[in-house]
Length: 445
Ligand code: SF4
Image 1 (cartoon, rainbow, N blue to C red):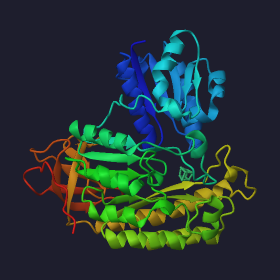
Image 2: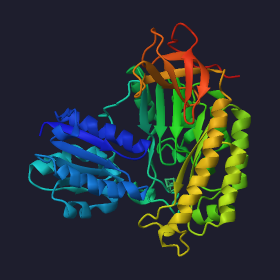
Image 3: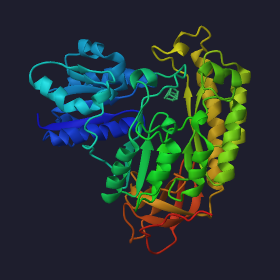
Image 4: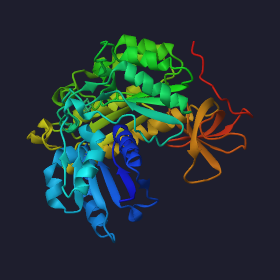
């Protein structure tokens, strides 16, 4: 076996897990295949938060089986944890199954395959966090660091506590070392990851997430620091203080609200009210007035009435998020909400989702239009996929900005870009300063 190809679905955590998988493959002497058809080994790093990816994986395994010769397939990620032995039983093509708590054991799995077995490695035993140093980071611009694994919240719709296990925070000093090495390797931005990143608690010092964010923000040479995903009920004033005080902390915050109806939030087991959420937003905006907020919303949760849905639309109108990730409720196995008797018909879920998008697309565009004429400091990620003469990057508020190349700038540099046009989900601009700035965090008042 000489070459590999990794396909990744789902969240940032999964994308980072793929970097960890790749690091181990490179250490084992394998090389990346340019296309999946030429790979001896294909890893499917899967997500089971929505229903569709689960079905997609079954059909993907079927497609890979039609390649000649078919590759060895390893199923990793949340579907691996959820389906386990069934994946091995369903297809002889699947050589091994590796849950998200076992990512560091890929080399062990490959050794077992070479000896003729089909290992099933799932579960979350304490020593499964190995091989974190072998991360093949894909971006030269930013590096991701998982700071907390798993989730203890048990929202009634969510499968994550079952597929990623209970919360396990990593020691703060280990995270700091990783952040320093990412910056030393040339990255400008670090992103701290966790399903509930702000419930982080250092297992050795007891420091909370505000302390961790403050410590990483002070890393020498770090320009930008992001974190995802925050749970509203763990967002405290110390954290707001770090957001306001540290110029390297991004002026972007993803803060899932899920619903605007108190009744639905209680059934979801979110443990905050719409009023508490809005109060939190007000406190964050008082400290960081130009922060760009994004959120997740589920429509058609069991028992959601038209009035509940209107309460969600009303909250979205009031908060005015820069981006809303809307989903129609999809029952996940093992979760309480899948067994609730008052399921909302699919047609109603779909219709509400369309109405939600009509509202959120309008608000996003209005907020983007208000930025026309302003100057953004854009960290260049690379060329636009649609046009090789156009750079794509992100402003300090994480908005995507596209602008024509002006000649002197390159990937990983920060340039000042005047916004000339707003699109539905991005901004279009032109370089104002002739020279790119190597270090350009904006001093905050
Ligand atoms: S906080 Fe809720 S939605 Fe988020 S991962 Fe945990 S259980 Fe899932």
